[in-house]
Length: 144
Ligand SMILES: Cc1cc2nc3c(=O)[nH]c(=O)nc-3n(C[C@H](O)[C@H](O)[C@H](O)COP(=O)(O)O)c2cc1C
Image 1 (cartoon, protein in one colour):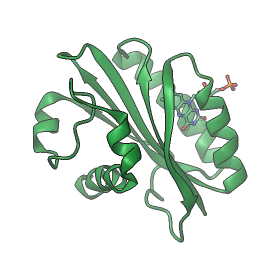
Image 2 (cartoon, rainbow, N blue to C red; image 1 turned 30 degrees about the vertical axis):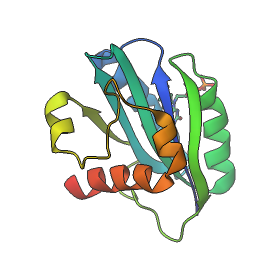
Image 3 (cartoon, rainbow, N blue to C red; image 1 turned 90 degrees about the vertical axis):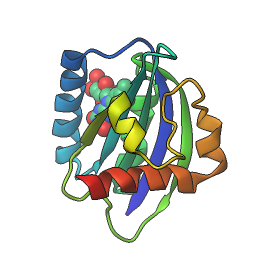
């Protein structure tokens, strides 16, 4: 089993119908390829910018192949791979693509390290420490 985690910046604020369309397509594809994972979208009204963080897991070739498509998607840019490798068991086996839209209220409940999308958010923090990204994903997994 292979996994991949990345962060990216949304090209423009994502509206609910746009997110729904993205998820609908992604879930259909991921289901057909036995891929699972979690997508987090965070819009910061303060920073006027949105960020994605996504974890994908499944067969290595399938993970790589969908990631190649995702990277080229014009809805986001500055796609930064945080972590990839082998895992024994899926983290999100029940989700073709789980989704969380983090608002400010949710964010205040997050562990202190999860500064996703606020004005001080710096993807490099996650890159320096893959643990941070995993902690964030696990937090949502356990909260679901
Ligand atoms: C943040 C983000 C996450 C995405 N996640 C997935 C995903 O998990 N699975 C998927 O099939 N497409 C995902 N997509 C959509 C792909 O980029 C692409 O639009 C889709 O695979 C359809 O590609 P096609 O038009 O070449 O068939 C995502 C796009 C974005 C912007």
